[in-house]
Image (cartoon, rainbow, N blue to C red; front, top):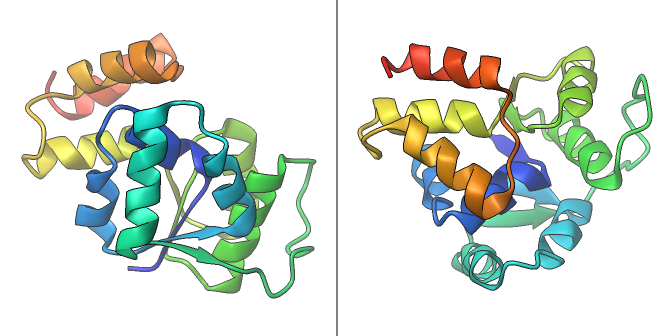
Length: 162
């Protein structure tokens, strides 16, 4: 499965020491240079080291964009989001990992299948990699400052019987 990621899923999983979820599920995760630059600025030392290890191990791969201006997006996005959408379109990714609501919508309008960090937690629970999702969401909130809407959290937890 060909997967491209934006910054947020990688940085948040790195902070809570769950980055291996992406490697275990996808094998290789591609990121554009703009996302690599954003990840390089991560201020969490252990998370930054985990990202560097993933790059050195070769399963997190930085890929250049052949045409950074495509596709045409319906509204302005940050450089990482724009580049992740462009790379996903360029390499015809099966999935784009992105958490930001406006970026997800723009990606869908570009014809991409979008998944996010919460979906990765559901997969991790169903695969038996974690005992529950609620503790992982709590760690993401406390350690990474990840925002999860209460209604969305209830829905996600209902999907895994919690």
